[in-house]
Image (cartoon, rainbow, N blue to C red):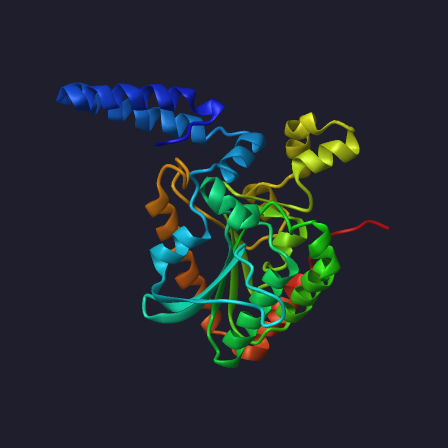
Length: 311
């Protein structure tokens, strides 16, 4: 069952009419409605506001990390545990092959349905999740296996237990270690990239975002609560924060925007998965042309060029 957002009401109406026409077997009406649906989809998705893009980034039908793993990784084998505390289900780690290229995939998984959301902690990792990601990344470095990071989290879990076990230290250590990790690394924001929870697996040779994803230092609700003392002003905050893929590309904070299907990954999962796979393989081929020293220097220069200031 497709979940429709408020601004997708016209699409919902046409989809319902299309289903009725198919049930009746009315061929001419079906073709007309298909054209109307395509026209309305193009009109709607080429004029989205920043807040609407935020809603799409959080859409419950959007492909999650495990959808991409199952769609692009052959002979996938899951790797568990940080070898220090426990296995955090909010971070998933796999090794397998993408078009014959041995690859490690590390992603944040939100979960579907109440039971699975609770199991995955709504995609908010504990420190042991980030330590698991680092352990697996170090293994990939040892065997010179490229890594694909899939970012999709509202943020690192802020609970007491997570703080007691060193949440900030775990994130900081990942930032430090991944900045000099000697293997090819590619990060993609597939949905919501929130704060340090996203940065913890976002330091890489290439950082890209899906067309309808967001990347921010704080959630729009949190920003609105701090600046206006009103979390309901999240739409105003979203517009002000410049957190969409296009905005961040213009600011040179990311390397590329991946053209997922114009109707969004939530309506065309296969198209979104193929777009990410193509981007990963193309980027991998580009980075393979650099030797280790050149690649690490390029990563370093990219990191120190982030941000701007006036004197």
